[in-house]
Amino acid sequence: MIHFVGAGPGAEDLITVRGAELLKRTDVIIYAGSLVNPALLGYGKPGCRIYNSAEMTLEEVIEVMQKAEEKGLDTVRLHTGDASLYGAIREQMDVLDELKIKYEDVPGVSSFSGAAAALNAEYTLPGVSQSVVITRMAGRTPVPDKESISSFAAHDCTMVIFLSTGLLEEVSAELIAGGYEADSPAAIVYKATWPEEKVVRCTVGTLAQAAKDNNITKTALILVGGFLGSPYERSKLYDPTFTTEFREASK
Ligand code: SAH
Image 1 (cartoon, protein in one colour):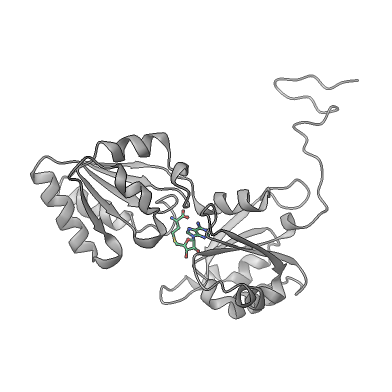
Image 2 (cartoon, rainbow, N blue to C red):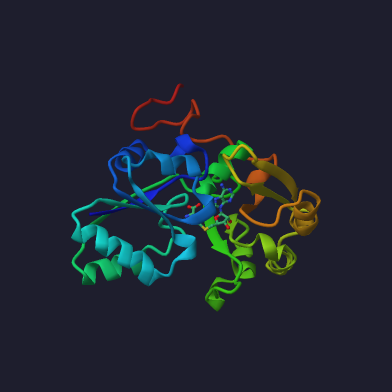
């Protein structure tokens, strides 16, 4: 059987307990390159075969899975963060379906959660934003036109931008075209939860300069929105004058 496992954002102990247990019992690990903590690769059984998918095609990944399956071996396909985001798991699952190879998906802690923790931030601040847009700039992988950064920016909600650290001039221009002021708060979180993590607070207009000043060229998330600023409202949930299913409002 194939176990798709989210490795978490970086720190070794941010894999789930379930993911770690599966790793300890596995015969084959196919991991997603440099964004997976190498310490996790030591969890497999003695003699565990390890493959780096960064150097492989989809066909080669499937071939490894198929051969393991024929020998009755267990495979962990280790993806960074949570595999549901930019993980290219669907195309693997569809081929496995055709080959009638069983698989399961074990969620992981995405880097967007790791970045919020690094910032001590709440993405969904009352009175500021109750929505999070997870997106990326179009690069070599295109993004549908209707999902441009400027069109999302027009919502003035929380934005988490993946895979775009090399395109920050364009990200800034699109955010401003969509309605952000150049001095709106923004942040760059590099290698969230890794020992070399960097948190850089800047503005929408200074994203590219801030990345340059801190030598950040990849493995970072761009965070934008009022959640990085100061004004917000208290939650209703913990407001003494607000009745919930579990608590009567005080008079
Ligand atoms: N499935 C992953 C994302 C894979 S795409 C997840 O859930 O996090 C790879 C991109 O994710 C990187 O280019 C970067 O934008 C972001 N990323 C991955 N790990 C990161 C980390 N620890 N800190 C900041 N960004 C990270």
